[in-house]
Length: 114
Image (cartoon, rainbow, N blue to C red; front, side):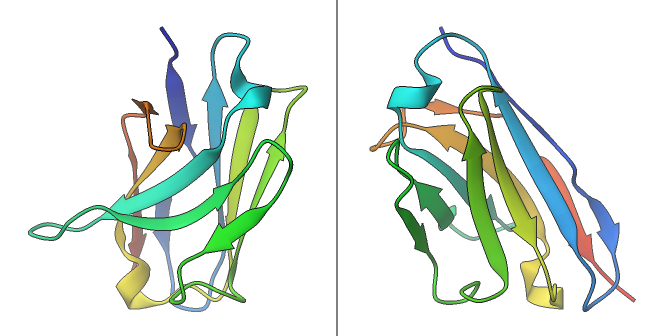
């Protein structure tokens, strides 16, 4: 069983930056696509960004040019660097492993507010 633990969420002003981290247990991390999703109350969870085992990335149109996903296979960790944050980026952010997603983290709250 894989466990995913997110960290790095918090309160930030519009235009600010945050870096989310997701640490995975086990030995399969380097073979798996990793992704970040987000969800707000009353809405479906939506894909923010993903990165394959080979490093190919994919982004939602709403975050292109502002967010960057990366991974460190030596640390079993995937990151989401979020810059130029907007009010509408406020959500719970979830890390996941696999395509389609097999495992999920518990989520970390990101609040963009002045």
